[in-house]
Length: 471
Image (cartoon, rainbow, N blue to C red; front, top):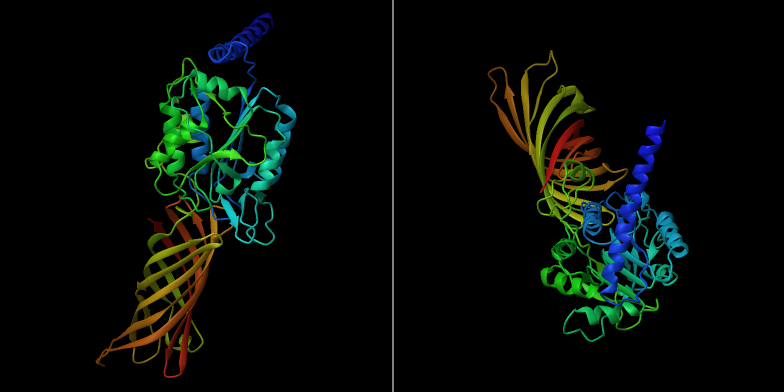
C-alpha cells in the first residue's frame, strides 16, 4: 500500500513540475517583451466537421483540425485545448462551449479559435453562417445554423485580452473588417511589445464571400507556416502574409472582428516553446488524429463521398437479374445482366446529380415447352440521370432514371433465321448504398425495366448490386 502511495505522489510531483516548467517557460518568453507583462493562460478551441447529418459530408476538416491542434500543442505554449469534432460539434455544444469560455477566461488570457466545416451565405441578407453537424438544409428555416453575427456576439462577451479566429469555411469574409493599419517594417520585439499591450480581436479566413474547396490550400499553408516558424513570437498578420502567397483558388482575408472591441495596432501572439519540435508521428496518431500528413499524400480512410465541394467523375460495374412481369412473363424466363456505367456527378448542398452512360448485356431464354425455342440477348445503349443524397453517413440513397435503345438479338435453337431489332426502353430504379471510403462505394437497387414494341410494353423487375469508384 505504501509503495502505491509513493508511486502516486511521485507521478503528481512530476506532473506539477512539468506544468510549472511550462508556465515558467512562457513567462520567461513573455519577459522578452516586457518584464512587467502579465500573461494569462493560453486557450485553444478547435472545431472540425466532416460527418454532417443532413448536409453533404466533407473529407478533410476533421483531419486538418486535428493536425493543426497537434502542431500547436507540440510547438507552442498551450494551457488548455477544447476540441469539438463531428457529432460533438452540434449547435448546442458550440454555443455551450462559448458560454463556458465566457465564464472561465480572465482578462489576461488568450483564446485561439479554429473552425473548419461548411459555411453558407444567405443571399437575401448577405449574412454568413457556420453550419454545425446537426444543421438543417432549409435556407428559410436555417435550423441550427450559427450566424456570423451570433459568433461576433459570443466572442465580444469573452473577457480575454487577445482572441484570434481562423475560419476555413465558405462565406466567412463578411465577419471582418479588413486590415487598415500600417504594416510594420519588421516583426521585432518592439512591434510585438506594443501589439500585445492592447486588446486584440483578429480573424484570418480562407475566403471572402465565396465557396472554398474541400481540399484546402488555406489549411495546408497554415500548417506549413506554423511548422516552419522558428521565431519566438508569431501573430496572425505574419501567418496571413505567408498563407496568401501559397493560395490561388480563394482569396484569404485578414482583419479585425466587427464590433468586438479590437484596438488598432494590437495583435494576438503565439509563443514558440524553447524546445519546439516537429509533431511526433506514431502509428497511433496516424490512425486517430491523422496528424502531420499533407492533404495530397494523406491516406483516405474516412467514409463518405470523395469530394462534396466540387464535381467529380465516377465509373463502375454491376450485376442484376431481370424478373419478367405481365406480357413479358409469358415470353421470357428470368435473365441476368452485367452492367457498366460512367457518370459525371454535379454536386450541390442538397445532393448529387449524376449524368452518365450505361450499357451491358441481358441474357434470357423462352419458357420451357414453348416452340420455337430461342435465346434473347439485349444490349442497352443509353443514358442515365441519378439523384443521390446522404442519410446517416456512411449510408446514402438514390433514385435513377435510365433510358435509351435496346439492341435485341434473337438466337433460335432450330433452323429459323436469327433476328435483331432496336427497341426504346426506360428503367426507373431506387437504391441504397454504403461508402467504404470516399472513393469506393457499393449499392443495392431495384428497377422497373420497360421495353416498347408495336404498342406493347414488356416489363421486368431488375434487382441488383453495383460497385462504384469516384475519381
